[in-house]
Each structure stands twice: as structure tokens, then as C-alpha cells.
Length: 458
Image 1: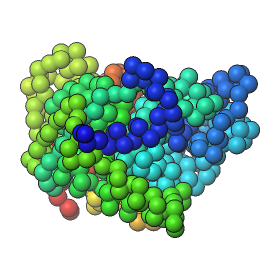
Image 2: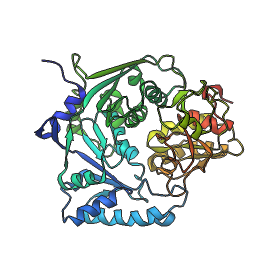
Image 3: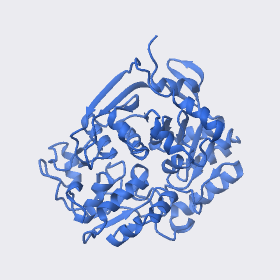
Image 4: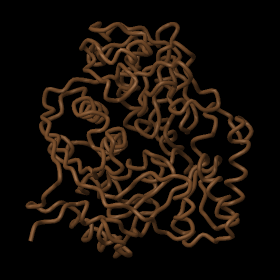
């Protein structure tokens, strides 16, 4: 009998009923709500006259529609003025735990889930956000769902799903200095296309993945959806266990001992077969940056822009075969569920220390959660960044989704640590370059795209 993949070990225990033709009814262990999609789905549930089946398994936080400037409130944006009171009323009425705007645990849903220990190996996790695959970094089966599915989970704690094919992506070699998880995943998407993982549940494996911290693994899994996949995950190991120890909602005592035994089984068997495999040696990888209107439009920072597609070049205001290095930028955004964690802010501060943001550049740092913000401030990172000329803001999705005025003006250029560079993603006519926090911070200091490795400590 062939060995089982990690995906098999995550999927099969959650099958409530096999419905035939590869379609199963799947039990949901954890459900996250946010302020953008949550109120509408909760309203739909109320209109159907249905209760929440398992309110203790659902957790909510405002992140998408909230303002991020200091001193914010419900009324700081039209979106939060409308959505936050509705979310608050529904959560109180239905018994759903809400990490509200004034809660020390508030933040971007894909940041606070792991840091609170709500995200655990072996769980099925859903949220009305496409980047829910982030939680797969812990050996969980996590995916984004739509409004109708949110209502279904609230009412039944289950979803009907078609079983996907499996893919293993092996990233091998020792990561060069200055190369991050963001560079790894952008390089993978550039090599194999934004549809390279379509229809597959992707296990990230290999020596380069094992070198990553949990925050790096979250960045890797976060962009699995930009590779075309609904699921992306990493088998839990000692790094995972060390991260989870002492988290508020993580198991303790005898429950932790039992959980560790179960988590130790969450690895693909040595003879497990995958429907597809990709292997990349990343030993010589350089920092990456996108140039076009898809994450697959990515090159190493020192490389020239390709000659196609022409529409992407036109939108981005770039010439074919020209170098990206030296391209002036007007905005830098460091944050989002991709790169808004403490290690990301540390990387930006290391570049910024002793330097100044270039004239004419608006540079923002938006922590992914209140906990990240407190930890950064305790280490003095906020002072380093503010002294350098960066704006230090409150947790939220912010410029990643161009809501409530957090936008890039038409025709202007932003180096962003977020996950999407589609046409208009950061505002109508905005030109977005995806990169790591170090590459983004270096662009803010230089006022143009540069290789971050060239900025030595002053």
C-alpha cells in the first residue's frame, strides 16, 4: 500500500461524508471572520433565521475596513463606520469572540490567528479571505471562502469540497544572505506561472523551507493562492512547536503532550506519491521584485525587464529590456498579511537605521497586529523607522487593498511587501512592485529600486 501524503492526513480525518465523484463533506475546525465579509454573511444567517452552530469555533476581528492612522476610531473611515457596529452587534448577539478595534489582540486576521495559538497543526481553517492559506504554514488545511460559504460554515460547521490533486514543491539549498521567503515564492511563481499550482494542494518542502522561521513559512504559504492553489502548507516540526509554546489559545499540559504526539504524525510518508512535483535549487537566488501586473512578472532586482506582455509594460510605464534598478519610486508600503510581522519590521529597520527616507517618497510601516506593534515598540524599532522618515501606523490591511484613502495615486509607483500587483490593486492607475521588506525599505531610502544587499550598515 502506497504511503500517504500530508494532505491525505489532513483531509481524510475531516471527511464527514463522501458524496461521490471526489466530493466530500468536510468538518471545519476553526472559522475566522473579518469586518469586510463578516457582517454580510452574519446578516444572511439572521435572514435565514439560523443560529451559529459552533460559536466557540469562530473568531472575528476588524482589519480590512479600519483606518490605520494613529488615533483612529470607528468613524475614521466610511467603511468602518458602517461595518464595525454591525460586526460588533452580530458577534455579541451570537456569542462569537471579537477582537475589537480597542482590543490588544486586534490585527490582520492571518497575523493574529497564529500569534494567539488559534492556528494549530492538523486543523481545517477557513476565512472569507483568499490568503487564508497563510495558516497552512503550521501544517493546517486552510483556505479562503466566499460569503455564501461563510454563512454555510456558521450554520453547519462544514463545507462541501472537491478533493484537489496534490503537488510537492521542494525548495532545496542554503538560502543566500539577504534572500527571504518572499523572494522564494516570487521566484517560484515567476518560474512556473501564476497558474502553476492550479487545482492542487501544495506541500512546501525541502532544506530551504526547513531553514525558514514560522514567519517566513507564513509568507511562503500566503502566496500559494497567487500560484493558483487554494491550499499551501508545510509539515510541522520543532520550529512549529517552539513557536506555538505558550500561545494564549494553544494547548497546555497533558493536552499539549497529546497534541505533540498527533502533530508528529503530520508528515508525508517517505513513499508517498504526489500528482505533481517541482524542485528548485535556490542556493544562488537573489532578491526578487515584480515588474508587471501579476506576481509571475518577477525578476531578480538586478535583471532587465522582459519584452512582454506589452500591456503590463505599458501599464507600469516601463520599457522592454530596461533595468529595474534605478527606477524612481514615490511610495513604499511595508505591511499586510504577507509581510507585516515582527521579523519583517526588523528587516526594514535594519536597512533604515542611521539613514533617511529619500525626498519625495511616502513610506509607511503598518504592523500586522497590536502584538507586533507592541513588540516592535519595545525593541525601539518604531523610533528607528520614524527617525528615518517612515510613518508608523496602526494595524490593518491598509494600502494592500487601497481602502479608506490608503492608496497610491494614478501613475505613481510603490514598492510594496503585499501580495498582489494587479491593475488598480493599490488604487486606480497605481503601479505596484512586490518585494521583501528589505528591498522595500532600501527603495524608500534610495528613492529608487535598488538591491538591498548594496546598502551596508552605516
